[in-house]
Figure 1 (tube, helix red, strand yellow):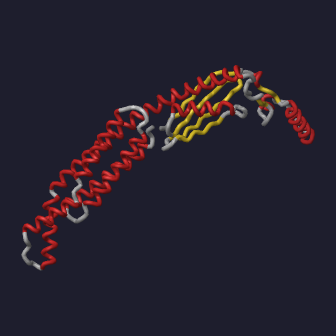
Figure 2 (cartoon, one colour):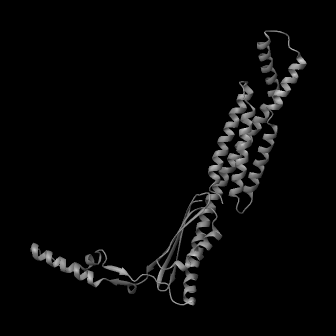
Length: 296
């Protein structure tokens, strides 16, 4: 799910800022940006992230900002070069100018920081990790709150689509009851066309119609579809990592819908109605699959 969160802390005289941003993805794709020289903390940051997030494109950024002027440096040599160039230009143009100190400080490269450095000694390094870890956990907590709110809204949308598929399946089941007489009418019309009006044995007609209806029976597919729908709703009521399970169920639902389409060909109104409903079911399932990619 999508979300963004940020947390702040202090470490080694620097202001620590940790931000976490996530967008939807089927798997976990973690991208980490940390200051140069802080690579010894990368594996611990990644492990902490994997403990909290299972799916999504996730960007983690760790920054250190100067807390006071002592952390800043003025490039004196560069300042002297800027002043010399300005004086040369003034003499050539005969322009009367005064020195603007604030403007001078804004020139590229004049102000720089010493930059954060990893402290020496395992004890101090561990203290720095505690500060980084605490800020990261705080940011993850805020991210979870945002993702939880989005998840609650998404679950409501999923329930609405499941209810739609359930209703459409009930309509298909009602139509299948009327298919056997329709098969008999269709078979009789074909036989009369072939036989040129000759008599048709009613018993033989009923037998052939029954065989045709059996080959087109979709009751098992409907029952399996209903079972998958019940399991889907049950998973939505639960907790934990359910995204992959939901995705698997939707694949099975799509298979049942495809089978229903293949078993009900023809031009009879009932069969055409079932085909239309099966296509609508497939469309709803596909929409569900797109949305389930956002769920862990």
